[in-house]
Length: 326
Image (tube, rainbow, N blue to C red; front, side, top):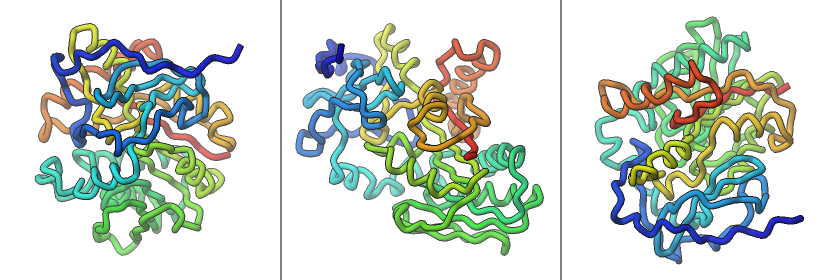
């Protein structure tokens, strides 16, 4: 029997009286009026299924609900922001006070730490001398540049980086063996790459299927795809029991994508290709003790039990996956 589309009827009109905590350090929520919202979408924006159930309200009047897809296990907003809303939100994004103390335009404390993390996993599976990196939503390219620096230390002879981001500035390479170019859209990229980095970007895109398909088409055979996304739904549910609303920072985050989503994505047909999952686990902590002590302590405390308990433990806050194209 075909399931009928969901009905948006969530009894959570007490948002204004609940304690509210932001789920992200580098993003802020913004209330959208009706003219800045797309019509209610019954189909999952990733797999097209209508088998979805409401989890919680993201905003009231007009209501936007976070919906859980029973097929691909993505949690997505019932109404997506319009292009105009996103343009307004991101127009002065990097001028935000959230970045005022940072020399880099990245949503990560300590790009060198992240670079070592990505380069280490890449080198465990690939030994290329000339490496090309495609950095989707990479800001000024600081993270992919940090990866390149580490890859050179590990034996690479040259690293070419293509950054796709609306931010117009890219950092200057610190080594002559590194080149960096910037494009505004993926459509401007034609060459294939060994390593594609989609760190903290998929959750921002209302309909990410096209972006993901393009990434996979631009990935060399044997190349590695990396994604890092929020996985906040289990924590949001737990907080709800205590009258605490965990703000997903809508419309910055319009999806919540965890372990079950990514592993089913690459093990099923959604990836539209043959991939081997190399590593799937709680994401690296994006903040540092120096910059955000309490947030960092909370992040490590939440993620640590997963390494002892495994899949049954879900309160990890974020997920990352490395997948290799066969």
